[in-house]
Every structure is written in structure tokens, then in C-alpha cells.
Image (cartoon, rainbow, N blue to C red; front, side):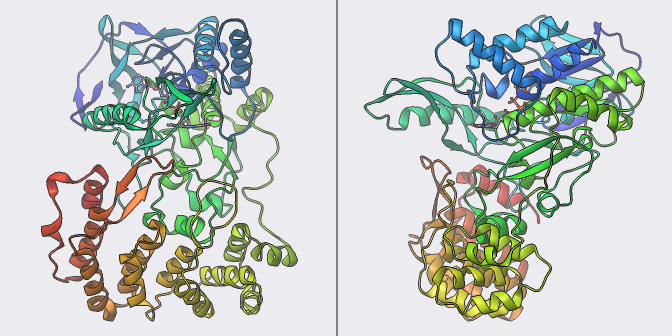
Length: 609
Ligand SMILES: Cc1cc2nc3c(=O)[nH]c(=O)nc-3n(C[C@H](O)[C@H](O)[C@H](O)COP(=O)(O)OP(=O)(O)OC[C@H]3O[C@@H](n4cnc5c(N)ncnc54)[C@H](O)[C@@H]3O)c2cc1C
């Protein structure tokens, strides 16, 4: 047998021969948070001998100790609804008002239901090792209040949010976005009373790396300082700050199947879902110029941050690739970084716990690998409980009527029309080329964005006009994150490799315009230089003249605009990397203080594209 451990971030496997176990279970759920609590209850109710391990002193994780006691999209249905209903009844008898649920009521009900289902709970317990026969799970080693214990199991469900157990087992995982290796901003939720009413506030505190103990600890102390530094109005007071820091994204396991944003948004989805997510692309990053190409199109050009869509999630996303008996539930399932910003909502994470427990129980009863559990049997169970919703009408509703397409392009929220025109293979170019000549400003400019997104250079004159006019139009979508039309046009100038406005883009980068516009000007210049080697000298010297100025500064407001991030060094490093790759000499390195770099700047330095 092998004992697999994490030592200083590195996976270490030791052959240990025969091992005796202190106790035996069929399933162990590690992490009794949003997903793990439901997985524990669902497994117990199916008569499976199940243990739940939790490092904190309560169930519910982000939903309870993390203070996120509200729902943001996701679909109804499943065991969690019964839990919430019971929590509401308990709250009515004992507790103050809650949001979607009262955090304390929920943790008592989760515990009660887990015990009634015959499961065992071990609090104050952390996993430190995984026992394997090759790639087959045999058990785990954990630290408990009684000391170290070896516990055997057939199935291990990693519901730690950060894929910690899979990392300990040596399974593959992804982390962060391609451009700079960063994951989502974290938050420490605080409960507030405002005008006598209870609520919670949820500002972004910056970035941490959940794989690093030091980074996690720094993040906790930093968040504490922010609570005290921030102004509190006369009519509001902080009740408490949550005990568990709110992480939006940690390790993402590599599963037997992986959900990628680009596939999903293009309609390439599974026909064997075990649950559905329903949400927008809820990224808290506001530096969209550094996102993947598909996201820049979605967020910057179409301005579709607030557009909801449905994601069918297959079972394979919860099975660690190549392993037998190693599963996951919650926000660490196998999705790419882009998809992770939609597939993490609480309702859905609870569904993931229910679905994986149902699959695990069937596999034990039938004595087959999880991936060989007959889909129809699993589907019937999940449909019955409501975890799997019965109707699915496609991922995204596109526009299929030319008149409505035109009307939407002419409106103040043209996003879905721009996207429809982009993804539609049909002959839209003639129609859009005609509409860009319209006297209606929105119709002509939005048609130019759609045409530009389709890669048609006929859009260029109007795109340049948008830039030269300093067009500050923002779509009126009523959703919180939106960018300027000018940033969309600049992005497309970069995509189309236009060289006429190169000097103007450098002026814009240097200006005091908003971050989305300036950052896109910089990345458009880099893109043009990448496509056109003959422009590299000119573009490099323009960028260097902006970035070498000692007083140059570029700042970014986080999503909930309490925290300002200085992006100056980030931009210097990004440009320096391009110049190095093109063999162009520069002295930006001398301006970068290595000892002062933030986590993001460091990540950017070390991520190789
Ligand atoms: C600030 C913030 C606000 C959000 N707002 C909303 C919202 O309004 N609506 C919404 O639907 N979603 C929201 N989300 C998303 C949602 O809350 C999370 O994605 C979801 O709760 C994650 O569930 P999970 O089960 O993966 O992780 P968690 O609920 O965090 O559970 C992980 C559990 O594992 C435990 N654990 C970790 N490591 C170990 C270990 N080694 N050993 C033992 N136990 C371990 C943790 O203590 C925790 O209990 C928000 C997220 C954040 C961070």
C-alpha cells in the first residue's frame, strides 16, 4: 500500500506495506461544507456507512461559517430545499431573522439530519494522507483531537472546496487563469445591521493562493484589517466577521470529464447531466483585458457579464481522472477556470453533493466503478428528489428573428444580439454592413462591434470613430459589471491588427481614462505587435515611454469597489515579458521591485504561456 502526502506543497508517495486501520467506512466525505454536508446526508440516507470529516466545528462551510447565507441563482430542487425548510422552522422558534436561511439554524439542521441518517461526524479533523493501492483508494490518515488516525474507506469524496484531498492523493488539478495564474478574489463576509435590519456585506479583499498556508494566513489578517479600516456609516454597524474566509476558486481537479466555458457557451454539452447550474459568468475580476480570448469576447465586446445561461454537468466532472474511488463535490469539480466562475453557486454545489453521493451509493451496491453506474438508474433517482431538473431548453437563448436582432442592436443592451451575430455561421455580414450605415447611433455602432467580432475589417472605420470620439457609452443591463463601448472597440482593433491608431492607443494607455479602456489599449498594442513583427520596434518604444515614466500609475477597483489595486507593476511585467520574447532591449526590469511584488504580480512573472 502507498501513503500519499503533501509535504511543503509537493506530493510525496511512500510504500508502507500492510497497514492496520483504526476504523472502517464505506464512504468518507472530507469537508462538511455546502456540498459535503449534503453528500454526507444523502449517502447516510441510502444506508451507506459514512463518515464526515470537517476541520471546523460546524457543518455548512461557506454557507454557515463563511456567512454566505443567501442564494445567487442556481436551480431549485433536491435535499437542500428540505434542509432549508426545516432551518426556517427552527429559526422561527429560536433565532433572529435570516436571509435565504439562518446560518446557525442551517448548521443545526444539517447536523441533525446527518446523525438521523446514521452517519458519523468528526469535527476538528483534517486529512493529511491518503492510502492507495496503485490508484485505488484504500483510506485516509487524518489528525483529530485524539491524535492521528488511519481510517479505511472504499470511496473518498473531496468536498474541501480547494481540492485538498485530491492534491494529497497526488491527483492532477488546474489552478488559476492562463494569463497570470491567478484565481478569483477572496472575501471575508461580514454581517451588518443597517437601520436596524440584518444583512451581510461582501467586498473583495484581494487575492490569496489557497495552496499556500502563508498566503491563506496573510489573507485572513489582511481581511480583518480591511473591516476596521473601512468607513461604517452612522446608521450601520458590523455584527461580526465570518470565521471562514470566503474563497471563490481554489484547485480545480482534473476529472474524467471537464467542463470548458467555450464548449458550453457554444452549446457543446453533455446529454447525460446529473444536475444543472444556472448563472451568469460571475467573475469578480475586473481586469478583463487579461482574460482568455473567449471571455474577452463575452465580457468586453458583448458585455454579457450579467447574461445567465444553463450548464448541464456530467458525472465525470466529479471523478478524479485515472483514480478509482476518488471523487469530488463542490467548487473544486473538474471545470476550467472560465467555467468555474459560473459553476459554484450554493444551490448547485449542494446538488453536486447529492448527485455524487447517489452515484457512490449505486456503485457500492452494484459493485461497479462510479463511471460505470448506469445513467438511467442515477437519473431516475435524481429526478425523483428534484436534484436533477427535468426540463432543459438549451444553454443560451439566442435571437432567431432578424427584426428582433436589429431592434436589440439598436437598444441600450445589445449584448445577446452581438453574441448571436458572432456565433451564427449564416451570412450576417451583409446585413451588419448595411446596419453600420444607419443614422441610429446604437444600431450602427453595435453592428460594428458584431461585425468586428466576426473578424470583418469593414467594421474598422466605425470602431476607430468610437475610439477617437472617446465614446463612454455603457450598456444599461441593470447587472453590476459592465464595460465601456470604447474598450470593446479597442479590443477589436487589436484583434483585427489595425495599425492606424497605434499612437492614439498609446495616448489612451497613458491617460486618466477608466481601467478597462487603458488596459485594453495596452493589450491591443501588444496584440498588434504580436501579429505584425514590423510594428514591434515602434509599439515597444511607445509602451516603454509610458511605462518608464516614474509617475506612471494605473489602478483597478475590485468588484465591490472598496479595494483599489495598483496595476502599474503588473503592466510593466507583462510588457517586459513580451519585449523579452521579441528580443527588444528595455530597462523595465530595473523599475520592478522584486521584494514588493503582490501575489498577482509574482504569479504573472512565473506563469509561462
Ligand atoms: C464571499 C462569497 C460570497 C458568495 N456569495 C454567494 C451567494 O450569494 N450565493 C450563492 O449561491 N453562492 C455564493 N458564493 C459561492 C458559494 O458560496 C460557494 O461556491 C460554495 O459555498 C462552495 O461550496 P463548497 O462545498 O465547495 O465549499 P465550502 O462550503 O467552503 O466547504 C468546504 C468545507 O471543507 C472544509 N475543509 C477544507 N479543507 C479541509 C480539510 N483539509 N479537512 C477537513 N475539512 C476541510 C472547510 O472547513 C469547509 O467546511 C459565494 C462565495 C463566496 C466566497
